[in-house]
Image (cartoon, rainbow, N blue to C red):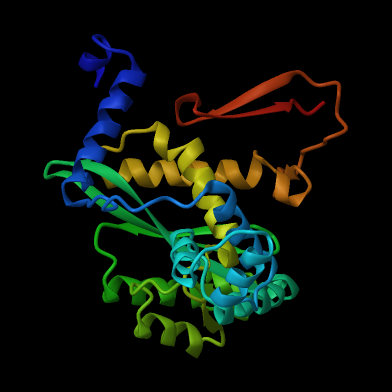
Length: 298
């Protein structure tokens, strides 16, 4: 890396890295055209999405009828295709989404969410996809990174379940979690769920195509990737682990969170937001990618 860095700048190296990842997942050869089908006007498409979101009980025919009142003639199949393209479920599932949202909002103190995200790691065998599993307590936004592996098989998942439910220091126990929400990913296998349920935590599988119901976890993934993961190259598993640990510490102790009043989640004991006397210092992590400005205690 030192030799290469003398030839090109860091942004060029990151660009090459992103292109390498893109080539790995390039599926353009397998894509098919739309067969010359006419595209529906953007205005009509926006109305279809609006009607579906604002009226969870409306089916395809009801939306077609509402559009006809406004002078637009479309088929129920067209409505269905547009909703599917945007990941909006059918009327019964949309109505169920609302009930789920109410449940999550009223039970945040005893609810945790979990999810996976992936990143590429450079190894002697080439680019390897690593799966990172994390848990988040919805009320406090406390995040626990359970582990990273290129092979999240049943054995690995069962060990994670034992770790997070262990008396004394398991994450779900520490948070007082009574419910764990997760998506329909097959990696959340039955044996994983059973260990958690046996520990007194009810597992709740979310409806199909409803990332909005695990929005806090989704937002954490976005922040992690944008502020940290996408700005780094990982040579081996340990470099990925180190970056995740540093971002976790930054997220909890040094990063103002807009969803919690734009304050620090878990500031240091000597933190004083009213202090305007001490010298301004900067704490850097991961070579300056993450920065935290604070006043030195008087």
